[in-house]
Image 1: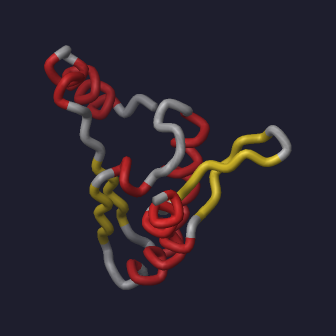
Image 2: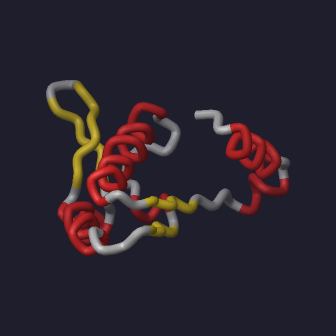
Length: 107
């Protein structure tokens, strides 16, 4: 299963010599190639494209700004990454916090 996920995920975390970093996958390279002719690219769902730790800001930043932002800049396009919170978190009020963070552009 992890072999299949590495083919579908756009980025994956790796640990080398005690240092955790993000790496592009062949799927990311293929997406960048296919998407080069489009003005807008939408990725749904972030958890399907990102195989790193969603709670690690440095990993998320490397994926969003580095990989997706790099593709957007290279191809002169917009990249829209959709993320969904789970239903339990939404019931607990987390959705309000997510909407507020998105509306004020906090990172």
